Image (tube, rainbow, N blue to C red; front, side, top):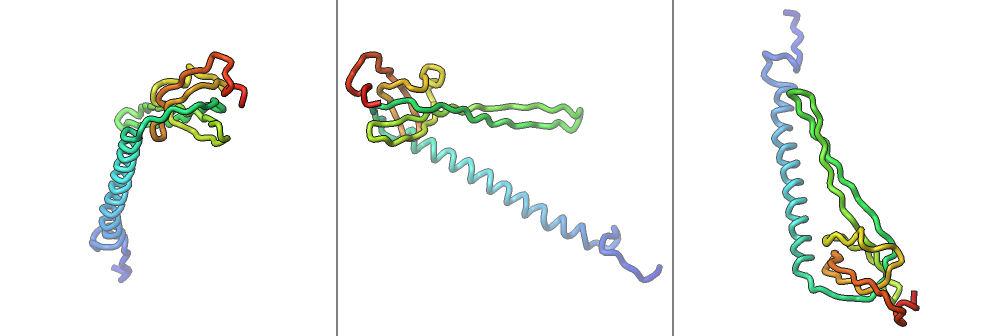
Length: 144
């Protein structure tokens, strides 16, 4: 041969193959740890909200928004893509003291309330779990 040895040659047993065989397990473990941490964090957030006391406060609906998460999956066998999506609904309330807070709608209230509605909101942690619209001309409504 010419005395030149490439680190990428198949017969050398080193070089690029060693680099990939070293990095793959490390990257796999890092991705696995990230997935586990996200799952544990999500479960902890759920438990915090589920175990929070329910509080009912007079409030005004000042904003509503949707957050759509879309996931695309590719099947390498027949090159077909499949997509799935999940929509999260949020309602922002303004309380008597002027404080505003956004809550995740877990009881499908999004379509039942309109911006400007006033009433009593049942809050549990970061969730809004009920909203009873104020239909009368009470003094609380005059504050807004």
